[in-house]
Length: 306
Image (cartoon, rainbow, N blue to C red; front, side, top):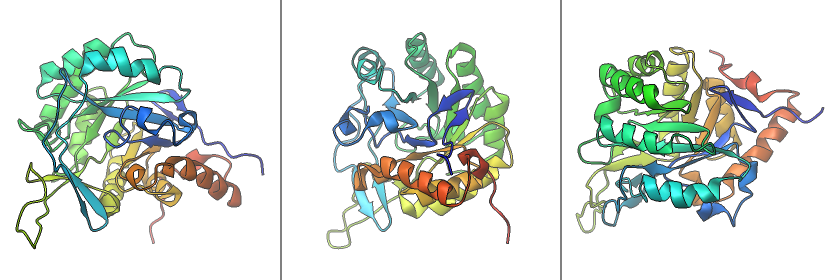
């Protein structure tokens, strides 16, 4: 058969394929430029950006766990002014979609950062990080309550010139009303999940492994949770979903799309195998061809009940 179609649309924007990199594990793209052809990616989601530069938590701020990784980076980033001046210069013209992850300690910070990004046409989409569990004064509050999520998204929507994609937390009793509130507030897409709360202690020294005490658990350990929440949200909202959580290869991409994701983000896998995304694009193409599936969009939400 001819080459299957891998193009997907999110918020009216066409992506060359459904495979993106996740914020926090891919830097600003520069760090991976010598390892992979960035132009082949569906998109790059860059590191969270705040109003000012942040050094983040002191080390150790990552710890390996069974089938996953804990991190408490503390939103270390260059700040929005340096991002615009230095990082967008590199990202411009890469030939892939650019998604900027924006974080804030309060609503005014979200608005400030978005206002600074407005007008930079090299940006395709804003991922609104309303769910980072690693900061004091805690970003969790924005995505743990439907009313607050609605307030933040609607306020940002009113001044944001880009399509808007809130990133949701799994650390809630029911993610569905929060996703629905984001959709009603004007979100163009939803990404999920952010990391799960976790903690690790060294049994030989009795010392807690992270200086922040708790951190966010990512990697294959959280994939079943992410799949279940993707399925729940897919059956709740009408806007596209970008799935995140323990995606390591093309089989995980297929699983997330069958659960309802239009696209996915590779996170922890980038630390294990820097070319995991490119390998997944090639393997996904072979998977579709072998099954005579002409369009990757035919996978979305097609999981069958036993």
